[in-house]
Image (tube, rainbow, N blue to C red; front, side, top):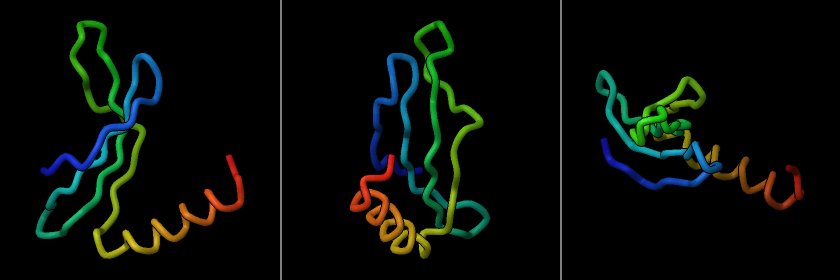
Length: 71
């Protein structure tokens, strides 16, 4: 697993983006991690993973949301 970045969501959660290989498939994983109350960050159920070859389409689609001012 390769960490690509962390985005602070709020005081208790962060979004972690990683690249990894699962059963021979290169994936991008975007997941919400949370503080379990002891200061340890743990992965939550919220998130998604998709094949690396879909990244250009995902980026293009997110770009459209940014340009449209959608929130």
